[in-house]
Image (cartoon, rainbow, N blue to C red; front, side):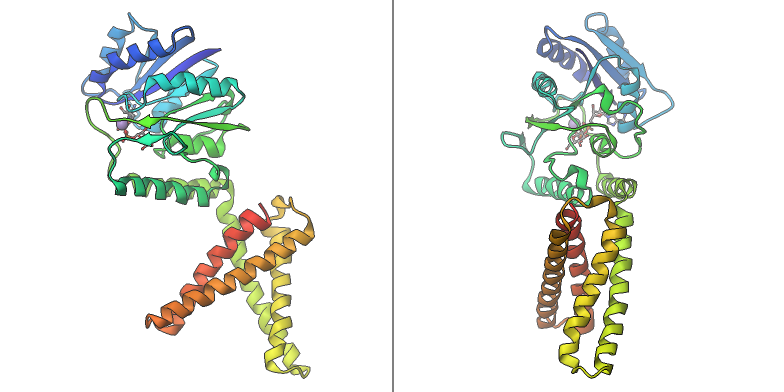
Length: 351
Ligand code: GDD
Ligand code: MN
């Protein structure tokens, strides 16, 4: 097994020597190479890497036209010749001593091994509570939006290992910062293992990922949702919901006209609307996800409808109590109910 350690760099000159030294010690006994992908750093990181290449097994790629962290990693995949790729930062926030643990996980059968801050034993050094909160909140949004990463605690880590087959012939979009997220959604793999590690302090220089990151992250998630077809589902679910309203009204009218009283007529009309929605969602919105037997799907769909109604009513009651205009309160309630029902159905009824 040959290992390629891919390190994107931008102004990391001062970190290279210690980085190479520690990687070499950690990978003592392994057949490995280090691939530096530098974007023509003003501090001439590439030049320093070339000098150190006399002492360490380093391949240096100096890109003069392209820029960007993700595209640098993708370039590294193309240039590396190992069977397993390790991706890590140059600033020693990712301790090279963790690499053998990642490789062990790969040897145990995982195609992707993530050095994770958020599994038991993992840590982040010197982060204020609100930084942690933002980081975890961002991950939670991703996990709710993208079913494929639902079980992964740190899908935005910049430190991971993978078998080369995971990304071979996979078109990865270089735009987002979070290349691991991209790989987890689009890559070819069965099993992921997360290995705890402590995300340390930057050794020298400064972070390049700042301000715009959060917005970019949301955009990235939005694109991945579209790619996965999850956004289509959301729209279909909404269309079906609207059809349900029409069915509900029509049957209510019909039942009242054949002589039922208005209060009781509402019950069968609602049930028929629920069945209408179930049918369309089953043969359209979630048609590719029928794993549970029909009776379970039906039951769960009803639970979702009831839960949604309850959520809608509670939000309505609370907001009205807070003196929000009642029609607006109802609209907000409907919105939340919609999201709750969609997520429940997506992950439980058809999950
Ligand atoms: N080639 C290249 N081009 N490398 C870059 C670029 C670029 O445009 N921007 C950053 N890098 C390199 C840096 O030199 C460093 O080796 C690595 O990418 C990470 O950059 P940092 O600036 O140190 O990022 P960070 O510490 O803020 O973020 C890290 O942690 C995040 C988790 O909180 C990264 O690993 C992120 O990927 C990770 O999500
Ligand atoms: Mn860093």
